[in-house]
Length: 136
Ligand SMILES: [Ca+2]
Ligand SMILES: [Ca+2]
Image (cartoon, rainbow, N blue to C red):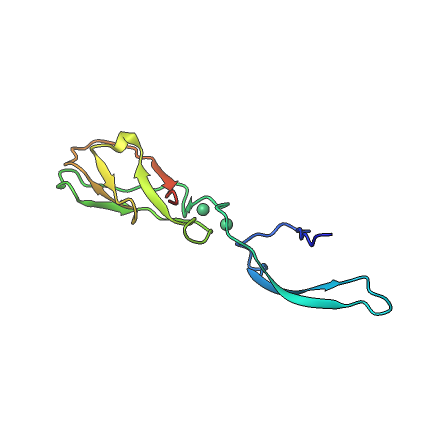
């Protein structure tokens, strides 16, 4: 007989109710008679994190106003997303959609958006996209 352990519930690493590491005692007893012999050892169970939460922006929609004729590199605004997982699964990078190419740049790590060119009264709608940093 082996001592296989299995879970009886689903653990969520991000739940405040979950203890991420719990120590138990495991006892083994033989079939001795009239006195069974036994020994014990300690067992630590760790609820490991997995990437089960997507990063989310704090708002559904950002809108920034940019004065025309500002030099390239002018500050436009910044976006922020949070991810409930622990590192490295909560690290995010920001990317602008392709239609912002040549008009705006976003700092991949801070979310700060600046102009990439001098704008001339153009009405530009920019959709902010993001993706997770891949763990190496
Ligand atoms: Ca995540
Ligand atoms: Ca997680």
